[in-house]
Length: 446
Image (cartoon, rainbow, N blue to C red; front, top):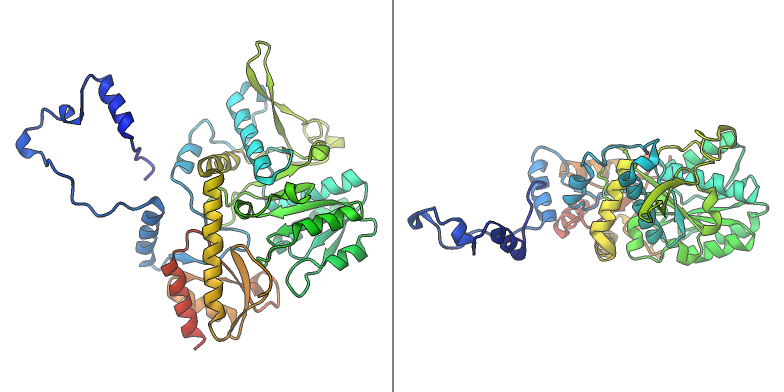
């Protein structure tokens, strides 16, 4: 699939003209007429790339490999155009590092600059850095930005953040003497606004996810307003694909947006490598960690790129550094840039719409299975949702696996004592896959 390059009729005409031939028949003039087919091949309807991938996945399932997955929980299987890895694997890009003689590598700096630009467009904010290690690291660095900007050591953190992200925040906080105050979720599975208002005190700000770990869509505008009301800064941890259909963080009052770019062209790979992203308002730009590539002109007036605002990094001013982030996950950042450029706004919106519609189709089907209940039926969700059920979640997961289906995540693996399951659907889940999973669930709960 990666080596096939289609040509348009115009391109074929140009190539024929270059070699002085009028048409394709002239190209094959040396082949005797009697052995030519002279009719179209009797082939079945062509398949899209995603359909071909699904066909091969179905063949792989015969070997016991699950061919349908309904698991998300922070790592999501999305359609990746074949052009993305093909372009990203070019030798010019195949590195994880920023060159230390930076201005000698204009192509690499431009790649970083394009990544930053795309992240700004995606989040609706003014400035972005050259990527951090992953979403959890980005969130932790954002907490450092809050405490540095406000000169306060207390930060509110929503319980709706992924547990692994909160664990990284606690590790950073332990060594920076930051006090993290957890904001509980209310009965609808979203951050408790009255708790925020009552416990803000001298907090530097709030960190909350959109959507949150249980898939619920938070009222981002209200969270931002509540944070600004006590003089804090609001950090929005976002799932980038959801921004194909949701308003951007910058439009809803977020001061900083962070997240993991795994869904932007990076395949599921046993936990990584992934790529974090960070964006902020112009006011907070100098508090962003890591490198920022800037655009300028050289002495002859030509467009050029430089590394700028790196004086706060540990390799230059170690004793005054605000962060030890000095890499930029270059290859993953380039991959995300290629993915976003190929998909464009319409492509990302289409992927988001399909994910959302298929997840809701799945949720509606599951709600009709006796013994399964949506945990937060009154709360809107994007493409992920939690359910409670009358059977052991591990038993349900095992029954699905026997039919080559990876079901929702048993939440007890992430949240001790939680007997529910977290289900997810993306554009890769065909309707027949969803119906097959629902059929198994009906058998299990019969």
